[in-house]
Image (cartoon, rainbow, N blue to C red; front, side, top):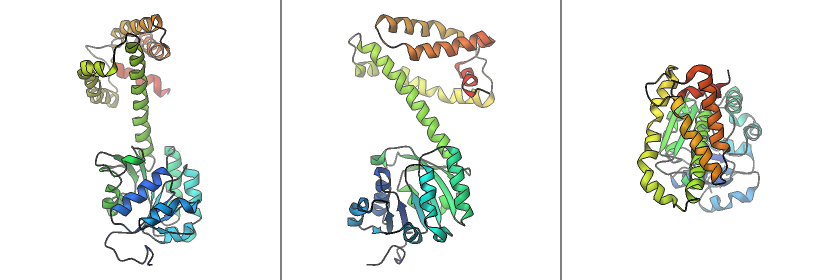
Length: 297
């Protein structure tokens, strides 16, 4: 059987290194999209289901990298990503590397610098979904690094998620985008669950709450662009909704939660943030002013 490197399909061959839950989903998407796909995993049997679907299995990282112009890496940690790529030796030269490994922005930049030093092009990606979401039209993937790689392999990247965006020439920025989304997610989820505990203590079903309060929740999301503009300008003075007017509501939430034996740590933290800003002379500023607390400059 011909290897992926020997095929003459119009669609470029792709190598996927790392066949965990996400890596297997990535390789499957390339196969479904008609790309000759070579796979490698430290535990070879992980490749069996993909080989049964038409993928080529490489015995070594070097052979896997040599098989395709686009090398996709999905492993645990950027130190592992670099170590695996190092094992390919000079086969990496002239290739395009797409690293979809999670980690910090500094780690992504370090891998990018090393890959470029080997004569290869580098693109970093941050996938904003779990494995079953790979390939969905609404799946978001943030990319950073080589614009040429993004353009050259754009149809292949579209197979991973319909909303692919090159956010920066800096390979570290996608990680920051992902962390910002996750931070917002966890904050919103924690607030929602605290509210759920409050309502359920009264026997109120959450679906009923969402039906009744849907417009209020939607309004919160709609306020993000306004907050973003204030942060970008560094101007927080506001004629309405000033920080001092948040205090009574937060205090009420704390007292109500305490009366119902519901944890008050989350609203108490918020109260501390607002009180600190008010005491520092920002009582008439918008909630966006609190970014100065998080910056710690």
